[in-house]
Amino acid sequence: MIEDVSPQEGLARVQAGALLIDVREPGEYQEVHAEGAQLIPLSEFEARYTEIPQDRELVMICRSGARSARAGSYLLQNGYSNVVNLAGGTMAWVNEGLPHVKGE
Image 1 (cartoon, rainbow, N blue to C red):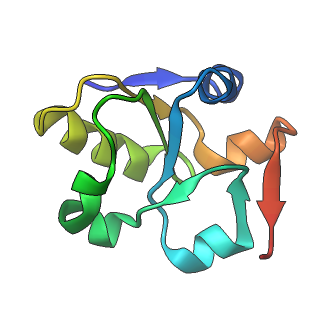
Image 2: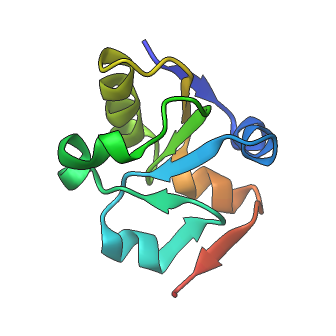
């Protein structure tokens, strides 16, 4: 089972060197995303997950937390060990006023 972290905890982990991986689709990502998030859409995830380094902590994020939990669990089943899920997803991140980018 993947561990959930709060938006503040997720930000602290990213500031400490974790990678933030956004698994939403490109249109959603362009509307708004957490600053620094790398996009690997869930629809492409199984084909592309090997792009993600195994030697960094990973914070998974989506819109509300469900898709990122699935993607994070997939990583844990495929040899990754340091993976957490951002509870509440991008919506919670933005609502907390954390750094984000709108409408690129």
